[in-house]
Image (tube, rainbow, N blue to C red):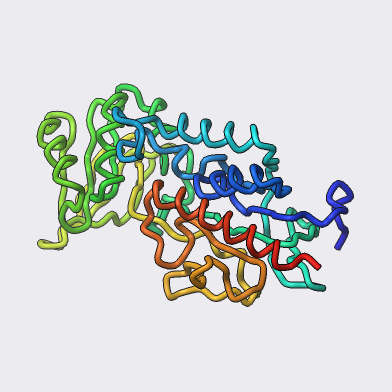
Length: 316
């Protein structure tokens, strides 16, 4: 395995991920003159950057667009000297008293590492989902909703995200069929908005998606099953947006020895440090996290302070 020449030095801190927790941690560590490099394999800002509107982040009385909040966090971190690189971390291990990371097949070393990889969208696992990913099947309304002006869409999910994104998609689509596996679990505020938009959003409860159907190599509907009657039926749509929960981005830790809980989230001690010395965790990927942006930001700040203490303890 070759070592990346541009990273011959041993980093003080490498952060895996660049969502709200990671960027907040970087703001704190760089202000403390801790050399900090973040590696992000997808979108800077994480899932927050792909959220249409964030209404519960403190300090924004009228709410804020997710992409704008992500940009503000990124700009603040970079202003203090954080370096954001695009690359996928594939492995983490303890080696020769340091933490070794494999990034896009190359090895770098760090005195400390913060894992803040967040979560990814949970998949339905039905026929047609993978085949038509990004060309009829989507997980980000903000990113892809504009492709469906004047079309009919299905949105899968009855929680806050599903209902919120269904409402957002009415900006583009003529009609939305909201498919809910059991009963609506969204907040009362969002459910009241649904009632107000009943002419544009039809809610189907107690149904499961059996297949995403296609004709002439394009999505043309979903086949759903009524859980009460057992009947199957076809709903004609031009696209499907799926919001059924999140899975932690921890697959790259296989074989690392870092302890995970039964949900795949990373276990930490009270200092947000894992069982692998020098490796810390913040945000949605941490076991016990509340999966809220404000909480992730708080985690990032706490982790940064604990990392500073750890690095100081290693001197000499």
